[in-house]
Image 1 (cartoon, rainbow, N blue to C red):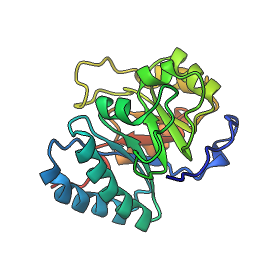
Image 2 (cartoon, one colour; image 1 turned 135 degrees about the horizontal axis):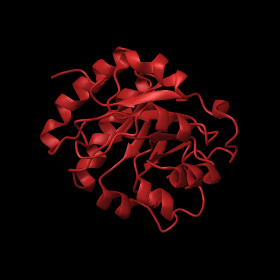
Image 3 (cartoon, one colour; image 1 turned 45 degrees about the horizontal axis):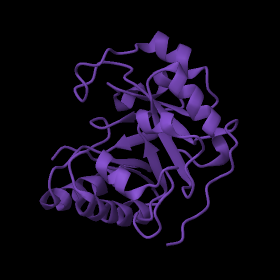
Image 4 (cartoon, helix red, strand yellow; image 1 turned 90 degrees about the vertical axis):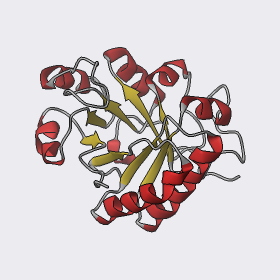
Length: 219
């Protein structure tokens, strides 16, 4: 399986890849029978202008996530959007080698890969074989490590209270700003975001905003 080589390790310039300001994180589905409905909703989001999608799932097996990814890839690439894979943890373990590189022939040809905070901290170098590598960050140490690796973007969360992680303590905007200004990477504010918060998030030091509900069409 051929894959475009990773972009150069230049963390100083967010412009090295064309990044939209809004990142759609997809909601979870538990069964392959839900893929058709999921695809219909993703198509609606793309029609509304979404151009950066993180395909997050924590419930499907490897075959199910592959089917979901292949469906999402067809839609995103037809719309000129970028797709970043964020599969269930056991699927990531199956598909990636010890350096977080891909096992040839196993992973759908997406644009990028998203590292959980735990996998980020286990990385000693930027994962190879992806045009875009993103990571989930929650503190200064994780942001610093993502910067050292030369990743393309990070999410920083939770900024505000969120139904996705109701027990997590929100950072709040002042703490978010203090952290976001410590890195040259594009930082997407995540957690409790609404579509109308982009301007305020950018004033707080964010490159953009990431969300599920704000960008996902209702059923």
